[in-house]
Structure formats: structure tokens, C-alpha cells
Length: 213
Image (cartoon, helix red, strand yellow):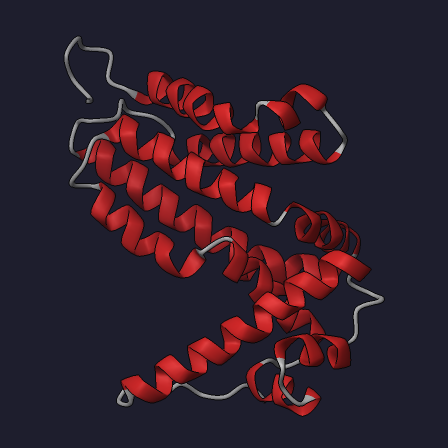
């Protein structure tokens, strides 16, 4: 059973979060090296420097560990704050910075993502959990951001739900191309945030001249 976090005890919460991050980082390393199925909780515990039973104090099982690891690698805990702060800045700059940060995370954790993505696609229960606990959260936050910008007149009227999914699909498509060995994409990955951010911004900015920056 996962350890509950007491909102009234910030020190305890920080310790729990630090231990969870320690285990998740170890899981990413072991899974990247051995694959999801061959990686064991014993090996993950050893890499994390904790007893094997400690893992089950923080995670319900291996599937829960996998979903939490992906969420951790994607820096999901900071996305809502990031989007809220972004409403006070420039639209195009934020879009490019958001893509740059997420694509850097993909590059840094490429081996881990390549090891876990097939599991998400081939196991229905795991795929459902991944969608509900990760993708749907990301989608909802991005919809709120685009909708807020549209309400401020800084994004042209669009179908927010479809626009967000089109953006997400582009990132996923680039990830798949990279995994399949697209040499140009691999070599010029660092340039893609500027290219993708510009395309997205140009598609979303208001038609009227001088509006939307």
C-alpha cells in the first residue's frame, strides 16, 4: 500500500516525495537497461539503495511504479504551475519553451521511453491507466491553457479539444519517428522545439495583425 501524504506535515511530505523520486529514478535506469518485464523490483530497490519491501510502501505494484515513473520523467507535477505562470507571458515564447523542455526530457530518457512505450500499447489495463493518470491530465491542463488564451483574445477561436490533441499527436509522432531511427530527426532534435512551436503559434494566433504576441 502506498504511503499516504499528510498535507499538514510539509517535512514528512518532502521526505516522501524525495524517496519516491529516488525509487522512480532507479526504476528508469533499470528498466532502460533491461526492459520492463526483465527488470525486477529487487533490482530497482538495489539501484535505489532501499529494501525491496520499501517500494511497496510507496507504490501499489510494478504497474503503478511504471505509470508513476512516466509521470515523473515528464515532470507532470510542475506542468499545472508552469501553465498558470505562462498566462502572464508571451504566447509564442511559452509554446517554444514548453516543447523545448518536454523534448529535452524525451532525449534524456529515450532508452526508458523506448522500453516502456510498447508495454503501454500492448497491455489494455496498463494502457487504460496510462491514459487516465497521465495523458488525460496533460490534455486537460493544455485545454485549460489554450481556452484561457482564447478567452484573452490571444488565440484565435478554435476547437480547443481537437487543437490540443493535434499538438499532442505531433509530439508523439516525432517520438515514434525518433524511435524508428529517423536520422535527420535524431541529428536535429534540438532544433525541433523552435520549428514545432512556430508552426503551432502561427496556426493559433489571431488573424488580426498585431494581435496575439
